[in-house]
Amino acid sequence: MFVGSRVRTTKILYLESSKVAYKKRGCLMPAKKSRKVLVTGATGQIGSELTVELRKMYGGDNVVAVGHSRKPSDALLNSGPFESLDVGDRQSLEKVVKKYGVDTVYHLAAVLSATGEQNPQLAWNLNMGSLYNVLEIAREQKLDRVFWPSSIAAFGPTSPRANTPQETVLIPSTMYGVTKVAGELLCNYYFVKFDVDVRGLRYPGIISSEVLPGGGTTDYAVAIFYEAIKEKHYVCFVREDTVLPMMYMPDCIKATVDLMEAEPARVKRHDSYNLAGMSFSAGQLAAEIKKYIPEFRCEYEPDFRQKIADSWPMSIDDSVARRDWGWKPAYDLAAMTKDMVQRLSKRFKEGKL
Ligand code: NAD
Image 1 (cartoon, rainbow, N blue to C red):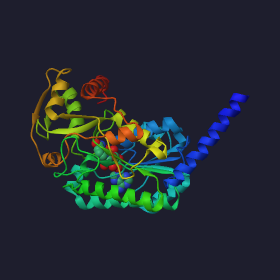
Image 2 (tube, helix red, strand yellow; image 1 turned 135 degrees about the vertical axis):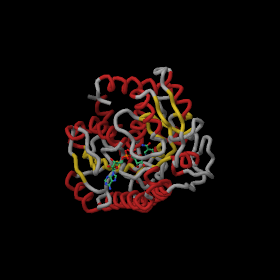
Image 3 (cartoon, rainbow, N blue to C red; image 1 turned 120 degrees about the vertical axis):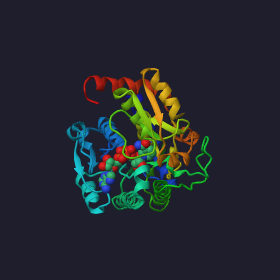
Image 4 (cartoon, rainbow, N blue to C red; image 1 turned 90 degrees about the vertical axis):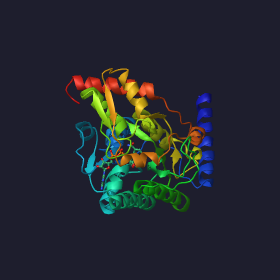
């Protein structure tokens, strides 16, 4: 009884002092245990796996998946609510937010780098228009928290390419990168001006085994596994010596959830945090795959995406994320390759690849 009441009193004191600290910093309330979540881009490479993970955390009914043109998987449709809408249409988005009483948005829908260079007008309109819609809804509906991913594409040819720091020159040469820099500034503005607790990560290239990526410059690092297993041969669209920062999906999801659940006092940036997993060249990746599939051959025929890759960092300094909210990746090139080959080989043998 005595111990119980002491614990309770300590908890109340802690909560009260936290509230004061959060108020002082212009932040909202401490992390909540239950959430009503909406994920845009839920049928995409990252959204499809993130949605499943969030449904495990908060319960299927509490996580609304929002898709658009891509067909949702059965897993996505059967594990919780699904809505189809255009994120450029603010009224439809707002209607869904109100319908489900959403308090937290993960806004992942976007046009990626390679598609964005083919259609820069679409990239600007969709990426900026939809982020503006989400931030305005968050401001008006007083949402608790918003997640929006930036990218290593926010850097450009004049940024340092090795161990690229958190604070540096941001002059990207792609429209996708322009939308990421402008998006970071807009997120920070909404935090400072309107107290919208928006949080972001500069994702590196994401490697995953479930859903194929949708038009990015690092897509080769996923396609190479599928082709190595199915055809024992892959024609890579960047040079063998092209080094880019990458991350395995479990680390990407962990970083995203950890940042979103971090106490407000630990989140000191509301533009976007640098985030690193591993860095390797296309040739090093092919050599690692060859350890499991010795007959695998990789050829290199660089196309327009080489120029984009050459303008991006080779490795990222994520020490600020590590210091602020304790980020630490689990997967390196060897561990990621082993897991990818095992998972995709199993699906291939089952005739599901
Ligand atoms: P993806 O291309 O796989 O998925 C994007 C999703 O957005 C698609 O499912 C698509 O249906 C949806 N979408 C497109 N237009 C829409 C519209 N008008 N209305 C509603 N939905 C629409 O992308 P991803 O790889 O999952 O990336 C998610 C986020 O992470 C993006 O913001 C991207 O810039 C960022 N990011 C991804 C990577 C990566 O390697 N995958 C790296 C850095 C940053």
